[in-house]
Amino acid sequence: MAAFTSSRYTPKERAARVERYGEGPWVDEPDKRVWQAHGFTCDAARELQSGHWCGYVHLPPGHPWYGHPYIGFSLLIEGERAITHAAEEDGHWVIGFHCAHDGDYPPGLMTLLNRVAKHESKLFPREGYRDLAYVQRATEHIAEQARTVATAG
Image (cartoon, rainbow, N blue to C red; front, side, top):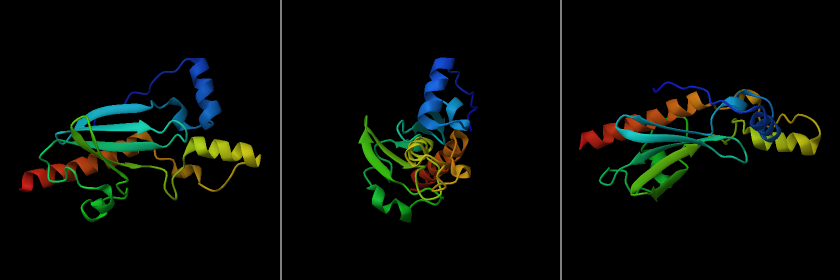
C-alpha cells in the first residue's frame, strides 16, 4: 500500500471543514487520493456533501469485468464492501463502492442531522467512520481480485 501523508489545511479551510463535517479524523484527511495497486489505477474520493469515502478501481478495455453492470458484482467479488458503481470513464470501466451503508458514519450527513435535531444523533455510531486507510485497503482488495481474474484467462 502506498504511504499516506495527511494534507495540510489553512486555519480557515480547516474551520470550514469542521463546520461542514464536525470535528473528527476526517477534518485533516485529503478529499482525493490516486495510486497504483496490482497493475490498476485506484482512487479514493470523498463525497463532499456527506463526507463519506468512495473507492474505485479503473479496469482497462479487454478486462473480463469490463462492461459488467455493478448489480452483479456481488457474485464476482469477495469483500465487505458491495460494488455500487460501474461505469465507463475516460476509456476505462470504473468499478467502486461507497462507505455510506448501514453501520458507516458519513460525517457531513451526521453534522446536518445533529443540527436539525439539536443533539448528537445515534443513528450511525462515530466508530463506523471508514477512513482513507480503510478505503485504500478495500480498494486494493478489489484490484487484487481484478488482477487474479485478468491473469487467469
